[in-house]
Image (tube, rainbow, N blue to C red; front, side, top):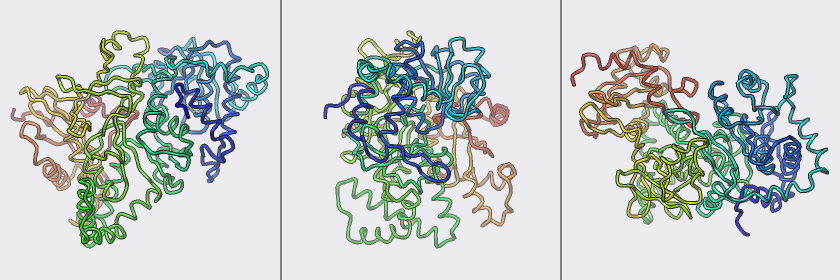
Length: 600
């Protein structure tokens, strides 16, 4: 089979290979998971694409998508691409002002929206968008001018089929260098930038990823990360289609933890936050089960670590270790795997660094996690762990066709067919990101080890520089706290300050177990973080986790918070990255109090 070179070749090739198969995707409706066949997907894409072709649009015009993950998202995406349009996915969680900025900057001529609620969000800013002429709503109907239901839109496309006999030929005429999509980076600082990804950028990444990750027609995934996220779109959308795997769309991000047990996927792709939450829940449950439960869990973890160490070194564990592991698996690890469906062949972690200890724990439990690395600008995957080279604490080797090197200042730079065309309407930003030799500057700091595996050490622009001139890398330090069962989240601050501080979000279930043991009455999170005994416990645990740090990088003060950081507050990007400046702004008064009168 000749590998595809464009996303349209990928779609039409998959549709031909898997025609007649019972399911390409599933969605939960009325409490039941319902199949969508390849034939149904192809027909709907055909009709919607023909309807788009009937509009006064030209190849290269932009059409946005504002929707939850669902089959219609895929239909809209493939239909836009087949109509030679450039689609612009938009995060649901963005405030109306940012959504308006993206639609205006992209010059979107139309938009697909999933619901009446999201339609109102668009209508509220429509007066700011003179180029936005067409709105297609997935659910229901609207009397608003220029709004048409997807049902009616598909009907128009079905009537237009006879007038569009060359739709597939025209779709396949796109070149690898033709623009396919504009994905706006959420950005931890500054305004969003539209990343221009071509058909060849994304398709080359899909083809290369499938040479590293063994995904096939017998696999199933659970799609719950937003499809606006380049990682989910490439892995859980295009790659799964190319491989012939079944895509199950979670009802929501919040429902994913429950529905993973219903779907029982073989492949799981997520950002580290999911694995961190599962890990914290496991620790909290082990801690709440009494002394015997804690002893068994600690013993099982030690056995699992011993077996993993031998495995990663290419050795067979001793007979005693193997026997002990079978018991540990029955008592502890099997329950974790069953909670995650019991069929996961491997999981992928991307979008942000995954703590090595957390990764090793899952590996010890028989859940293989391949950590990878990439950015929206690189379509997105650059490196990945695999069965051929599994090395926790690294993001693996480069995938085929991708080059990586470390610049003199430690920055990771890359080039290859996956590197973006540039930033939409931002030639200066493009020139700053991609040098004359085609190397894209990632902004991440890293190193390559003797096995050719890449290790990310921090963000170049995320480094904190204390008033004393010392540079501190916050992410690894924050990661140390996430392996402690008493912490759900942590953010380090201290740029241009006398010393670093740490904002701590306790793992309240674990904290409540400790409080019960100490005969401290149960209280709300707000009251708990105000209690001197609780704060002392939290800070003591933090210092214990960070005891091996150098003096200059050790936080001297802690701020214990009752609430976690959220996308809605602006403290997290839609891809769950911390916006330190927003966090610092939101807690400015408490932070100033920590520094007030402190010794330098």
